Image 1: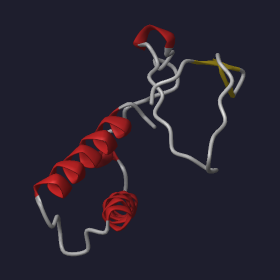
Image 2: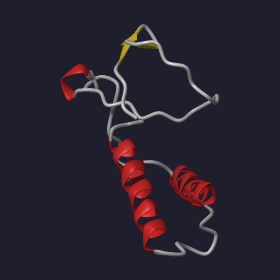
Image 3: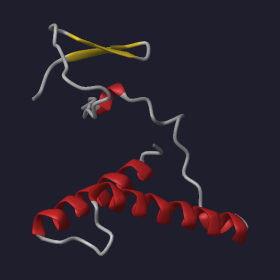
Image 4: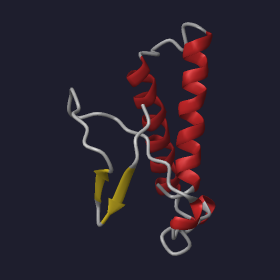
Length: 103
């Protein structure tokens, strides 16, 4: 279901009253690109400029992120069917996009 809301000072307010069944719930929020001031909040770093220890830690965290997403979908041995494979690919694309945007 898609509903309209307004984000203001760290809070999301629905434009129409709505009663939710369960808490917490996962939501998806689309923000227009022109409303995001990411120039100052995101800085690119060349990982090669950091020590081997830092590079290993970044790789460890990336692997943890992937395994966490796999656990969330129940994909211990990989996708069981095409729908799971597509869902898994979508998660990886979302994570990569988030990383590129500094989130």
